[in-house]
Amino acid sequence: MSHRRWHIGSLPRYRGARYGGPPGGPVLVALRQWLAERRARRLGQRFRSNHNSDALAAYSAMSPGIFRGINARQAWANWQVIPRCLHGRALARPLRVLDLACGDGASSRALAYHLPPGSQVIGLEYAHKLVHRARQQLPQYQSALPTTLHFQQASILEPFVDETGQPIANASVDWVTCCGALAHHFTPADINRIATECARVLQDGAWASVDARSTLTTDPVRQAFTHQGFTYTGEERSCLLDRYPLLCMRKHAKGFASSI
Ligand SMILES: C[S@@+](CC[C@H](N)C(=O)[O-])C[C@H]1O[C@@H](n2cnc3c(N)ncnc32)[C@H](O)[C@@H]1O
Image 1 (tube, rainbow, N blue to C red):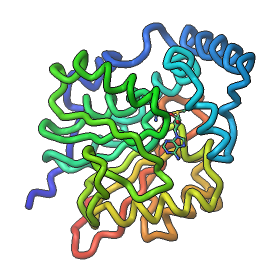
Image 2 (image 1 turned 90 degrees about the vertical axis):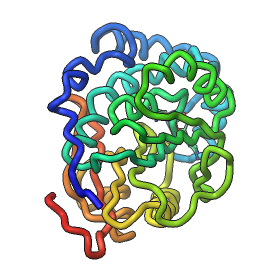
Image 3 (image 1 turned 180 degrees about the vertical axis):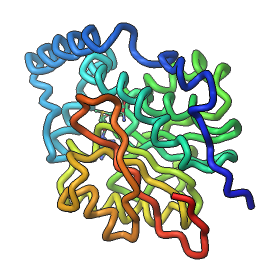
Image 4 (image 1 turned 60 degrees about the horizontal axis):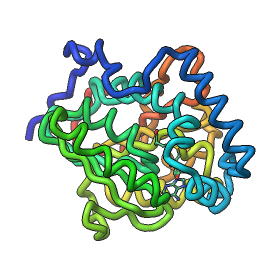
């Protein structure tokens, strides 16, 4: 089996990866987010909670339009940081990828755009309206993508499911990503559950790129994944001002030669 790595940086599309992000530069994106957050607060939709049931109640009540606004910074960041994670780490062959807490599909689309051709992305999201919106937008994107995208309604605190809603088999996934969720909407106990499930579905030598509050060894996300036998190999951020890194955690490879 080939262990060649996927080098996105050598492709022109990495440099031009504004294709699927929200329109406007960082200032406009921040302004849009601020206005949408104000609207959400007025409607009593308090999504900034690390009690998952409170966050889920707020996201489930939210219209896709408000969600797009409050998620604007994250959607912008995804197009910068996701290719950085994949570059030089992902294998250069079709991959099976899970996007945890995918919202309206912004992170899944950034993944699908940058993965090796023939890859499959399954986005898991709890809020029905957001899953519906992600599926609705699919025809607009799918034909331009070299990969296949699916969205499934599910809580990531339950065993992960595939595009048909069936539990995902052990060691059958090549990459798991989670953007803008683990660091914000889960307690350390929840994060441990999610890390355990990531360890179950990922193959040896495969990767999880997951959002955290810091890269410190005391960070709950880093701790949970390390405890499950992942090795921290580095972090990626969308820009210098990005407070939340994506930690690149590699599941311990048994007999798998590593160049990283
Ligand atoms: C800030 S949004 C990030 C969305 C997406 N990952 C992105 O980068 O655009 C956080 C998302 O996590 C989802 N979420 C929170 N808890 C969840 C759970 N237990 N299962 C599935 N999704 C969850 C929310 O519904 C929300 O859509």
